[in-house]
Image (cartoon, rainbow, N blue to C red):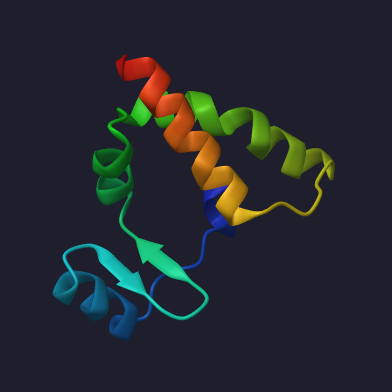
Length: 85
């Protein structure tokens, strides 16, 4: 994803992030500041970029498929647990 493809936040979204300490959660979405994501998962910005780059490359080439958020989160927690043990 190119930086020019990332939408700007509305004033309401920015205000909600400020009020929610970097997190806004709705019924079907979560909006988070990058620093919150990094803190939650214990990654540096470089770690996050390294882990996300293969998926971003696949998106650029159109190699995408449906996935389950629950399965993804379970795998991330499993990986994190194995890294800390």
